[in-house]
Image (tube, rainbow, N blue to C red; front, top):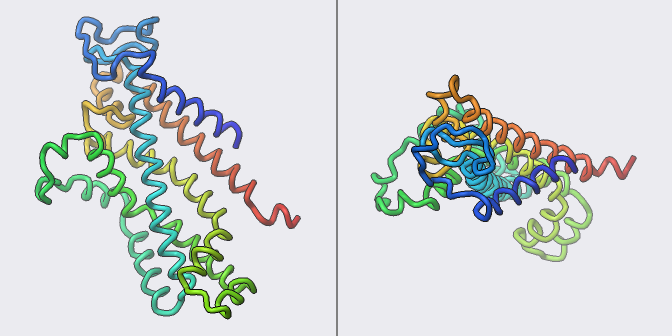
Length: 277
């Protein structure tokens, strides 16, 4: 867990401080195309003379922002559905779990490709908004979150079924507490551990999904940098300048591995059976 946390902290600091030490990620210098690593360009430059280190760190900011925002939104949706299904049971449980099963049964990548390929202009979105960085990130967050809540919903439902039978919940019911108060004040704090672990572990998968969509030209689009569209730009020159693909690929690998290490560590640290043993 510590190794994963250290890697993520260092990556976050580097991405946050990148504008202080590196040129703008979209600054063109055609005279310096495919320049080798140097003091001015630590990782070299790309096919348009843009600083590769700057684009890598700015792309990390975008990819991490998408992953974290999507994980939190998906966790919130899944937690709400799982709480309602587990606490009320009956018809509500059956309907919500069948909805969850239906979403889980859909082929993930083809569904995301269809959703990402939809034209926002046909929904009345102004062209000025479509070109903004915030819209590009927000659109991708909403698309991935639409299908990313199912694991959390399943975990929360199972934990809620267990906690619902405990004495303090029965006492709250006997005292006339409302279902909303019971779920938020008595059940949710006691099932926070699996939610935190599932959310942390999902970040790595979301980074891979965002990278895949951006690689296909359906996620973050140039000139805004992300690790996925950096790989897309490197396709045509990967044999002559492999560094253009190696650096974003290594960043994706390292970040996903760090989040998985952090999630595994949290799972062990928050495991109630460890204290019982």
